[in-house]
Length: 504
Image (cartoon, rainbow, N blue to C red):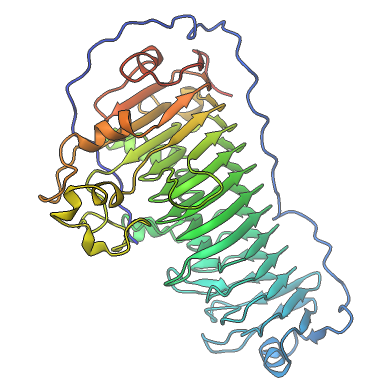
């Protein structure tokens, strides 16, 4: 699924200089509420794990001195067997397809110092479709999965528990995900493409939990540079996941986005995470639905991408939380019917929150970069064509809408001297492009710009701001001061307070 970067939108006629009515709210001496408490680090990569030094009762011992011992013993034993990998480096075999094929309910436990090493020879570590497999206390490294494929749970089997492992220095994704998967307190470090790729071909992944992991330094092979605009990198990528809890993770120093949900995800809770120092967006929620983004701490994200935008003269607001064609939809069951962004602490990121909608990107449009996917409200992309798309309900349902977004109770702080920017940073945005394509599109000209800005229930309120924040409504040609953002016609950030001092 190829995601291109948005282009600067065509300008509208400026609304003119608006009166400065709320000078009290912008006073540097105004007393403001305390910012949210920072989220804690889940330092799984340096944690001391209490893995069993002796084989558990009834477990099959796997000997690192015997190449392929783990493969052979997995094949020889029945479902539900527990395997204990003794300390040392375990090898699977000389062929690139030498791999472990677990049986249903198998458990694999590593002793202190147990390493499963692909030696840059084997593509996959654990594969197959067996459900309810558990992997604990192992270091899995040196596997060379191809682009878009993964090393652990390669076939996205259901019900796996991946806990207290170090999955590092692999090509592709460190692991894949299936339904009912639990990814708990792992170190997902320095993998070539993703720490985890939550993707299951032809299926929706349900009930996914990602809790207490450290997700650091992934995309070492820099795939966005190798395939320009591929949209195929990050700490974790989610595709068509219905129901995910992403809780208490430390997501940092990834070469790309931190967390990226792309195409028909729904019902996400993203809370209590510390997301910092990622080259691109901290949280990217794209062509997806219904989420709560709450009580996260986001620091120093998007400096690399934001600076690249500024240096090439691209005025698009490179955001820390980026919602692209994503919003609340009551007709799709979830724990919320909105996207709520609340209680978050954002410090010294390149910019703040961007709500964006590409007027030319909709179901059945040639400009839809999501590989022919349609919205969750239309079962057949062919329906989204003229003349049917010209009238409701298809007029509404063929678009992924950025709608019903509530942004409140957050603290936004930026100091340009810390970020190292002279322009284009410290921005919030609510905008779309001028619709032009295809020629039969019903969303041409200013249609979507007006809808996202004024008609789709997207509201900032009761936030606190520190630093020289500016705001972009409609398109990238307008940059407003806080007073203009708060007064007609926008009336955003009612109840919010602003101080001119910056930083955290």
